[in-house]
Length: 285
Image (tube, rainbow, N blue to C red):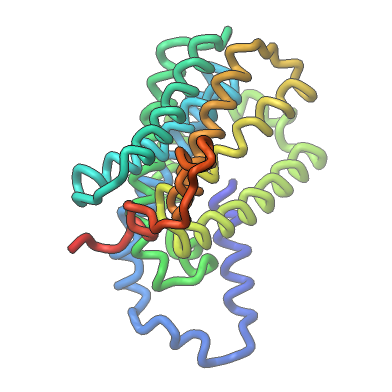
């Protein structure tokens, strides 16, 4: 539903461009873009599928907390596969992110092995999606990127849906397909479309690790809304873990902007350049 809504909306918006030269900005043909974006679409689709699968076995806050390790996985990909160099303060910042995830996850009352495993797989796919899309989406607008990836996602998810959920849908057809539920599904699809547009824009303009760190800010909001709307039980360990995760993400962002976190904490901060590259997507020399 999300991908179909995104494909329809992006196609309509792209067709409404008034400047005929806009379509010439990307010199690659449609086929070349499809080939280039296939790995991104595969990683993105797997990330969505395993994330939703994880929430079938455990709570949404728990899944999102585990997915807070995405910056760490992205960092490891660049450090060991692309030979990026980072300072010790970067290491400590991401260690806080990891520690926060472990603390919050250990206190989750609804945790089970399958939910944890699928959340970790979703995190790995999200990290790969971030790394792959950072270079490729620079050549496309967010609308073009979503328009190219949506058909891939639909084609990959249809067989899975037919083999795992078709019978269940037929059983509850009368309850699912009514005006109220369908309207909510469409509105949810529009919200996800806007979220994907912002995410594609973010991937194209900021470093992958910084982008995924900023995404961790949603963890606290998810816990708050889950507590307010779903009466999800929260405890001190969840709040401590979330605080460490968010704090580590903020620290990493400041480090990438050239701030000396240790200097700020000790009162000896100097305006120095960060040891890490400003854009993780740049090739190391």
